[in-house]
Image 1 (cartoon, helix red, strand yellow):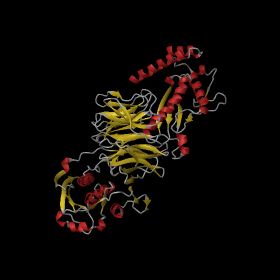
Image 2 (cartoon, rainbow over the protein chains, first blue to last red):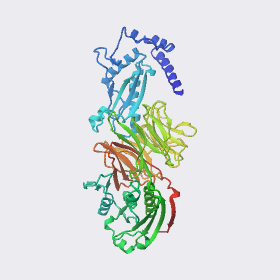
Image 3 (cartoon, chains in turn cyan, orange):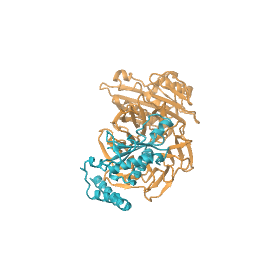
Image 4 (tube, chains in turn blue, red):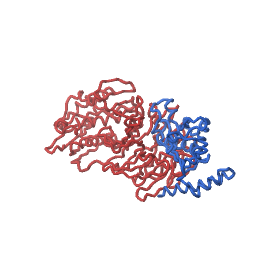
Length: 177
Length: 460
């Protein structure tokens, strides 16, 4: 119960923030309307009439320019949580998608390599997820559409114990729902 | 050292490594591998004579240990402070005090002799009497009789080892303790299974406390040894669970948004310190398990504060924080609210525990890019690396503060290892399957006073 209330508070706060910060942008009116009367039952087909992004067969976001699935894994430097410059373009397309499909939401998983302590890595994984979350929300994605979970070093992509494996394991992954 | 080696092989058939050199001795299914480095002090020499009475396993089945004396000798040798005489080097096998000839044992260089006797009764309960003799002064200094069911014989053996250790060193023994750890079967695959296991401190008598397809980590003990706390991802995200060891009853005590991690019981067992990121970033909190009141201890926006550990009096918490840019160990006085940084050597120090007495710290220390277990004297500001392997983590201390257990890797597999805090002794506990990690050494556990029949001590 308390959790639901917390989420609602965040959503309202987000609406205010978006309305406040982006008052010069054209989306403002739309955002304000949705906050007042969220229409969840709206068929996605109507949104697809003039799609700035497209959806794949599994409902996953596609690159609007070439129709390939958007990359959903973003890698990080050792001990760092800064998004690589090359990933910003792809993340911006995810943000576009989530802005266009307000009924879609995404879980951002944060992961680390095995070096260092497990609890510190849980925190570091969350920092990586947070970097992605902040990018998405500052690009107009609603906080209610994004959720973070850090797995620390517990779910490696590569079970090896060398630099190659570690590089694959330091990552944030977008899991669409 | 050779005596020690022979004793281990003859008694237990285990592979032994000395001074880091693998001797590759054939051994039937080694359960525990021992690495003992050269020490400064000469170990106390002790003979633990095979106990008199019927072969226990013949009479009582596999629930009984082969030989109580072996368990006692192995405990004492694992401490690194004792060198136990190999059975085949003994010239007599006394089972009663009248049969002990001190001169013979002195000729063998023994400082102490332990003898004992088992009497199996019709109901399969065993009366175990042991005697500890000071061979240099021709006298008995302790004798105790215990009365135990077959499945309690291992407990009795560890209690005897604890008594012998304390009588001779003056330090309370920690052999009759338990460990918690996480065993991952099929690690790194989609069929991975995480098991929280409780076992004797020597790795025997394992029991699964909880099992999940999702990660488990950070187990820790309540001070009475009857409850444990750990982090479980069973809901898809981190939650903190408290579980009763005997009944298995589980209570979810923290499932806030974000990270729920690093639970540790306060010394009075009433509170749980933890790291929660519910307010945006990981901070240290203390939850009262009775009133469920949650108190926030640290307030550092943008910093990671995690891995709390209590001071002995419950009035301070040490924890890992990167508030200075890199993870270091801090201590916070819970009365004054003042925080102090404790570690300054290196750019990665984490998951610290204070040794009993509060003057020394054990933690994970990165040195030249390699993760070791380090020991620090807080008053003299001296830091020693206790381990030489890489990827060493999760140090946990025996309740008497003499040994630290930690997780490390061997041939790409996670195993547990133990090192004495003077770094003289090191041994591995290797498991036949999966990845072993996240050890937590129990507090002192009460002996079952009902099993004690009699005790007699004499001043040393």
